[in-house]
Image 1 (cartoon, rainbow, N blue to C red):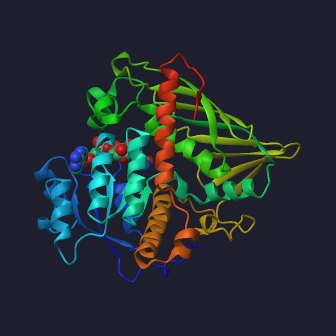
Image 2: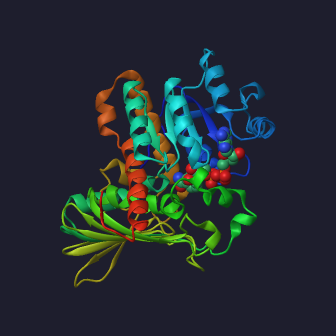
Length: 390
Ligand code: NAI
């Protein structure tokens, strides 16, 4: 069971850049960060519009003087205060992540950044170098990875319960963008603009999530891939709203990834199926408390979160906030991740290397890998689906 008494003596003084009123993902950050009282929201540059930032920030209980017009002013002004911020979460459109993250690390802050962390691998590697040199934590918000059943799957695979992995089927294919919704939705509009979104739309927006799940669960790395991508809504070109990727992994396993925003009628369809030599496991984000375990020749077993037959000793599996049978969801997953971010930030500040080494979280390497996926897929797709080395 998640131990709510294991928390920091003092919450980390925390700010957000982006995530303003009406944003898609701002509330998820605030909900995850505040759940266990490990972070306290004390400042922010929440919005591209300064007045809206102040109005929204004060409505959240932030001192109006600490609702800043932009991130540069936020970092400068907070650095001058005795009670200035210690960490920041960045939930702005993709094209701003690199500059804001860089400025945050240089201001001495721990960073939690949205994905994709940058447009290029070189930029993401630069952030890793900066974070390392400045001894700062860099977390990346792969928000589905706090679900206990993801960690159960990881444990099962590493303990050999399905045998050697042969095939990985990944998909994150929703239907919300099957028409030109960007005409009326600012959040969709920037996603279709390469200057703000980056070299890809759907692969980066959703494909990177399930791709990261595959690597986390199996520990496998891609050796080479080939990709084809389309813009079914023509005005979105050159950015794709649908993509298929084939992958070869270093252990000889193969995989496919389908990322789509035009899967009409579908909600998320984020599913991952990992096929080993003797059994398969499958997880679906719309039913995150269950994991399907299918041994060849036996009836399908649906494993349920919170049950004693799981690998409860593994902290990621045992992070139950309520017993099995009750539905835990997206916000619990985010709170689990924010709890890990807090633990590792404190350990970093105190030089507690043992805790750092023993606390898994999606870090800058995860961010780099996600950007590499996008870069390689675009390279392949734009060269007639050529196989490219990863
Ligand atoms: P959005 O368009 O709904 O909201 C963006 C917010 O950032 C708005 O409040 C806007 O005013 C503010 N903003 C824009 N530029 C800014 C700047 N320079 N300084 C301060 N504030 C600024 O976008 P959404 O959907 O919330 O996405 C934000 C980021 O989160 C993206 O990188 C996206 O890929 C990622 N995301 C991640 C999810 C996850 O599951 N981890 C889910 C949804 C989005």
